[in-house]
Image 1: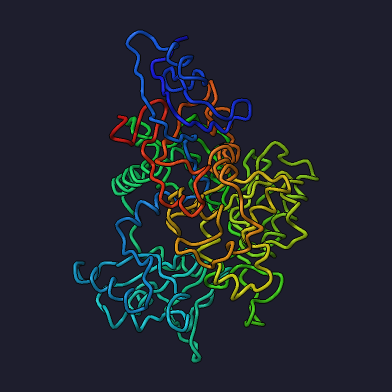
Image 2: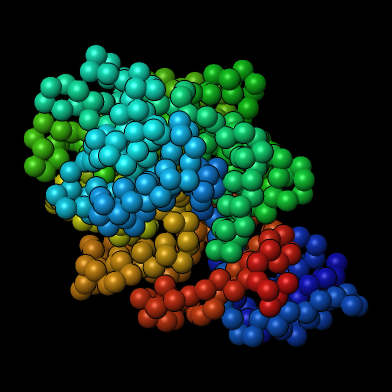
Length: 532
């Protein structure tokens, strides 16, 4: 077989241990044909085949975001963006601007607020939104997605009063008189969902299409998304139209587990563009609203150990039903108690001989007890983690977890234990920008260099090669696609990223200055004007 495209004069890091560094790659159709020297690869071209001079650029396999809420990310690009609002007044100003341009009575939605960076760090209240608009119901998700800030009209629309009981696995935050303050935690957020219009299919397709363009420019060619039917429908439409440029693993919400079992869906169903993953379950909340489920109380909050969204008995039942049906389980776990509970449940399932071939995952694995770290590799459970959370959450972790933060975002400890890391972003909670994620994993610092010295718990830093591995090979393994994706290897799909500088040799803080110059998806450039 001959190649129709040869890339040469590059600094190609293949992530293939058999041939880790080459200068050129030959591509036939949508797959890598061979890798090697410039002369060898150019000699494989068919007459009239295309040659692309990489001009010495550094090349890595196409990135995979192993944890993203893709439709939500696409929709967030048009919602009120409260990320980076350093003060309460700035957040309210942004809401006010959108209210002024929105017809009376329509919902205002947005996300990204973070009360921990505001003066005092207290949760906001409905009254503050009421002062901005009493004519629009307002629903604003915190950056973590585990708390919502609503105004009085929204509370009225959804029927939440002082007499409304907290749903199991959630909390309506109340004042001293028992009245709702305007903050909804965990499953209490769902009380508002029936009153807010779901995006139409056309809106969902448009949002996914826009998000795809954005992440392709970041070098992302694969995603593992964790959403309901609207997302899957939109992705299928893009695929049917020949416009899908993301190799997608779609997780199934646990609310749809029974339907999935009745339909006979199994992990791995699909093809190289779109396939079914596992069942997404929430075991607890998050750090920001202090709802992550902990073994001991939060520092300074002796009565608070978080919220168990799914208890041990229910978790065991979900795992049993899913694995018996051939579905892996993909579980959100932030707190050390939540992680231990999930590990215990998966260990019991493994010992019972259930689904031994399935690749179960714990999403986030954010703070672990030291005794539980080795269990991921021991049980072959994938820690699907998001490095940018470490640098964004470090101050909150120190404040509320104290010394327990030593094993928060414990990337090095997990790696050294033999666990297979898969990296993602949790967008729209954080940016899907992989370059920022690599920087966070390697430096444990923010862009401004804080917290200084060698980074936050520097013993948990990874090398650049390890971080890239987790965004490529690790993501492919977590999605069950390692035979076709994740490395620049003959026979695998021709997905790669061209970078503006050599992130493997520059000073780690300079990684943030790196641009994605081109993205190749299935042998075709989907980003990079100078290469297309």
